[in-house]
Amino acid sequence: MSRLSYPGAGEPRPAALPPRERTVGQLVAESIRIYGDNFSRAIAIGVPPAVLSVVTQHTSRRLGFVLGPTLYGALLSASFVAACVLVLDVRVVRRRLLEAWLLGWLVFIPVTFLVLLYVLPALVWLAAVGLSVPALLVEERSLRNAVARGWQLARADFVHALGGLATLAIVVFLTQIVLVFTLRGAGGAAVDTALSLANIVISPLLYLGTALLYVDQAARVE
Image (tube, rainbow, N blue to C red):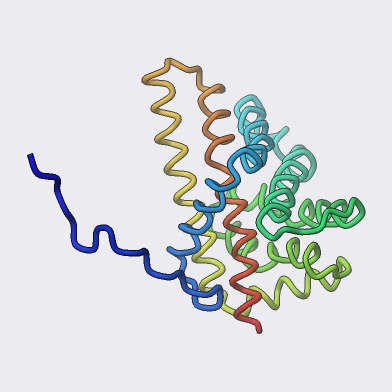
């Protein structure tokens, strides 16, 4: 039986566009490639979101308003800073990492409340100010200047920033749902276990892609 052949099969893959011209689709594809190339390091980024998913399942709405600006923000910021260090090859300086983590904490505090209304406002907020965290790490800016730089990066191409975050969020969300149902159906895993494993494996893609988005927006500013 002859093998199926497809047009273009065996031909070299087309060269990726430079960051300044990178599309949302290529942003997602490049994020997946980075994740695959650094899987052993990137998998740790999913641990804080996994902890968050378990805590959320057993937390009342009232307690959630307390944990939102405290535990939730701290965990999400830790994952984002770790992703920035991995993607952007940042020189690890303890003081700079602490500043970036604190800034990320402040950035994520409103997110934990905005998502209660709808996901889109949270994504708009992250697109507007979220890139201040990698800006602080890479460009070694002060906290105030990093926030201003984050807004400048967002305005360089806000459609690309918001579209990239939205696409990453959708891909991660849908993939997690599929993985949760697969783990519960095929493996008989409990809900908490399935959610934890899905977050550990899939959620790093969101943070890695957001860190890579900084590269795209910085190139567009220049």
